[in-house]
Length: 167
Image (cartoon, rainbow, N blue to C red; front, side, top):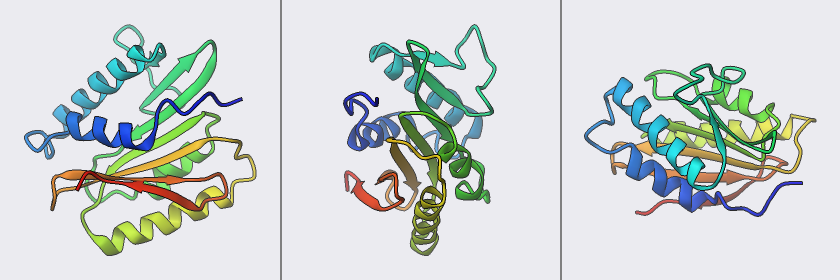
């Protein structure tokens, strides 16, 4: 059974904005380093074990970061900051099939038309997955035109049920 929503969309958007700031936005290695540091710190504050960590640098099933609690996979998180990639076709599809309470993709998209397409496709991928259990699906998209993040939440049928941004 999924535990109370302690990792809400608003919290993750704010964590992204504090972690991936304007000064490192275009620096891939620094962006990844800061993501791993701050998201690991947040997970540990909530009492979760983090993988990969400093002792075990291997990714779990090629997922960038996972959070564990008592042998249960709490969160699977992908951070895709490669320009020109299609994070919905690659990373989102992978997350939908992982058995985690929270499935979170953080990526970047400043174009409104592309963002609309990504949201449509993200919902469709969830709706076509017969293995989806009760879970939180968060898609966070950084936008350099406003230097911030937009957060989107989907239900298990692929319907967009919430959105959040600080601007």
